[in-house]
Length: 359
Image (cartoon, rainbow, N blue to C red):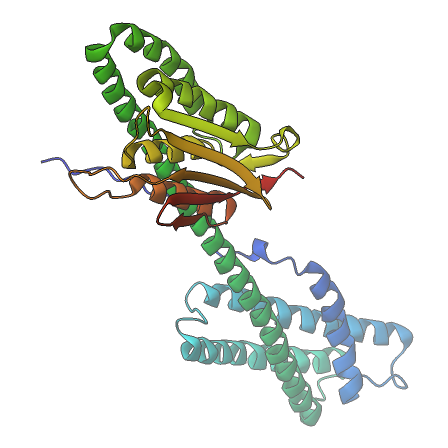
């Protein structure tokens, strides 16, 4: 048996361990010369009175080279260890690994290079107190700089994680919305074909007219099913086209009243195929006739579209699953981040749809 293929959504991300992710060139250009000059001044390693200007410049050039070697080596170790240890998963191991790595690199290198300075500029007369003090200061500075780097990395990790979560949530929402939109198409077709089948038996003439009008209605669904929002005007026009299909079958047994001022229809947006779903829901769940017609009323109050119909419940063979209303509610939430309001009173079924103003 062949295994089913499952399409999964992946969001590519680059590892933060890549040094290209951290632009610290300015940081290094300033602080490496700073430490290379400041530490010899603090320890009084370079005696300006005994050295010529050229020797002083060469001495500071050498100590800046020490700072460069210490910084770049520890930077390489830091980036390398990031691919093996994670602050969130192994914080203790991360700290121990960092301390051991920078200690075993910084102390021997600093001591060796400082002794080398004495051999070059002091004829090999090493002042071990200054070497010890300088190495200690270098080690403290390295720990501080490593702490700064790790803080930056933690911030970057957190931001990257937040961004990835947002991307995943957005992808899930888009997938859910697409699935909900795809439910509209077969649902509408199924109901329309049932109606057409009924009309073919009762009135072939009406069946032909219904079929012709159905093409226009279905064209709107195909065109706007993928849209997040449509103009209220377009949705009201579509509802009237859909209602013309209902009038072919039910004639005067169904009535539609739209009480939305003309000046509002081009100012608001709503998710497509919302009103048609509510009209279809009213037809499905209520008894009506020419004597007791089903009245569907649409009005707008305080940036909400109010859709109401009187209740005369139809006896259904099985309890309704409310898939249509649940679909509409979820689409509204995903598209507009707003909730629809459903009121089921003794005499009326009322649905309030929030509308979005065009900015």
